[in-house]
Image (cartoon, rainbow, N blue to C red; front, top):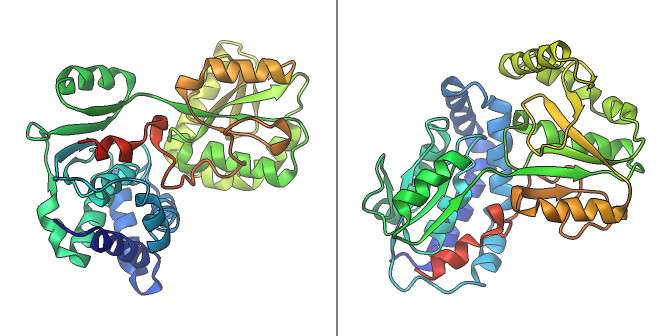
Amino acid sequence: MISRNKRINAFAELGSFILSAAHQETVEEWATGAYRRNNWFSPANSLLSLHAIAAQFLSTDKLSRWVADYPEAVSPSRVGVVMAGNIPAVGFHDILCVLISGHRLVAKPSSDDPVLIPALLEQLIKIEPSFQEYIKFADRLNEAEAYIATGSDNTARYFHYYFAKKPNIIRRNRTSVAALSGNESMEELSALGQDILQYYGLGCRNVSKLYVPEGYDFTRFYQAIEPMKDTYVHHHKFFNNYEYNKSIVLINKVPHLDNGFLILSENPALVSPISMVHYETYASLEDLNSVLAENSEKIQCIAAPPDLKITGSIAFGKSQQPGLADYADNIDTMEFLAKL
């Protein structure tokens, strides 16, 4: 078994590799390769994700403090990981959890992300060859002794059926929301725009729903995100979605706001289509907290300003910067793995 210190050092070295100027050409090749296979993964977004992984997860200090809260695996189990592919390298945290805890990874990367995850693991093995025996790619996960699977509500039902007899974490659809007080600065509104639009809004940590005070004026919000326009107007997949959704709201005479690349529509639904954000008004903080509590099982994270004092909320601009202990669906993956 690879010692805990060796595991930590290997992942920390992987982080240094990603951020090192000496290796940027290689990392950029990964990003270019990912874009060739999936045009939603722009090279800029893949690099953004990889650099966030390195900065937020892969330092010796952060990894050491994180794993210190969990016991070592007594004997390694084979853990099957079915990964999502909605944003670049989104399955990496599950991989990290499995391997850093001493278990064996049986990985099924998403067909939407066939480049970045294999590239990261290949580099990890170059850094620490002992990981070769702990990493396996497979289309079928029959040999696994436990499962971590991420998918839609439909695939979650399938996972529950097939993985029910073994320990598992099954994740369903979630999305993220933001609450505004009306006192936000232009910088905060711009940061909120990043929470909405980064990765083209495809992540579960992307904000797809806004809660605003009654009578809220979106003019300043649209002004704050105007500098982002070129990025989204010139991405053909995103802009095709925008034009399609614009035609739908116009044909159906749905009241909406539009700045040429992001549509705002009053709608109670938490999940909104690409290039559109739903919003809902609240009359009081009690009403706001009530609706957030009501939907807590469907919400991944809440972005809000400090003056709203929403428990567990994060600052605008931070939704796509999770830390090691920010577990998807609030299920502690490391605790699950420690019990195997």
